[in-house]
Length: 314
Image 1 (spheres, rainbow, N blue to C red):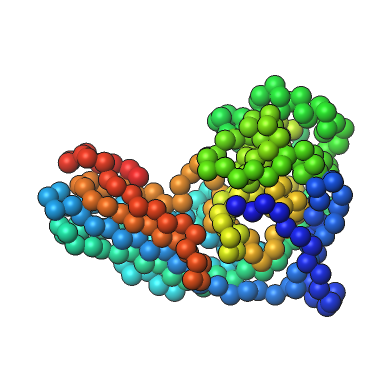
Image 2: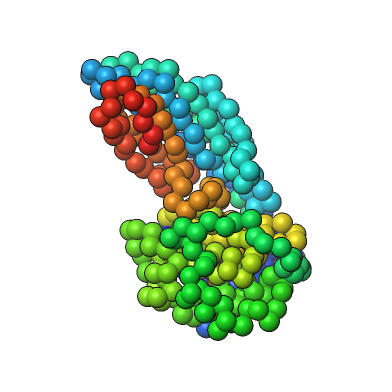
């Protein structure tokens, strides 16, 4: 996962995107990139193999694919079986497909392929002030619980109640996190309280802490699962403002924008949502691969539970 990023210096100042960046001392710097789209190939491959006695049946597959927004655009060019692309209430793009049966010891594949264009993006100007209403996100899960006493105490320490300016609140939170929370790569998602108490965390914990602090202040925020080209899966945050959803990356220190190496996969409806959901009956093995260009960034092998007739979910 992404540990840090640095300012990129370019000579053509008339055709660049400059994104505010908070360094580890809490100072404002910049991240700058040429303002041009970069073309990549996004692909998904799912391989299903039935057991010898109890074949896979009635398979339902739902896959999050990168949504199109001002930062990125996906053009799906191939799906090898009939499929439907829908958009959920969070703006996520979901590809849904059905497979009736996989013959014993045979394999069936679902292959999706498309071109995705990534360009640097920054929300300039005023984000607006907080509105006098309760936030829509009221999830109190362990990972992003914004009602914890320790979270509320930190809000007081940062004096966030002295301003209603959303951008200023985001800056103060990110500056504190950049100075106090060290990057720590963990194989598990440990949540906001781990980052707060241990003063360390991966991008997951840092994003969870940011979401918890923003929600505790009354600002709607959501965590984003994505990919930092060509290194690893990455997580950042979007804030709801008067100009729409605005990205911030508390791990890298970016405020209000993303570079062309950030690929957004989906908004988490709730923490730890899986990028692919598969249900069905029967027994077998399902291999899932998701990649960009020649790099596979998600690779999992799923074994169906030993249920002969009951429907299972993976």
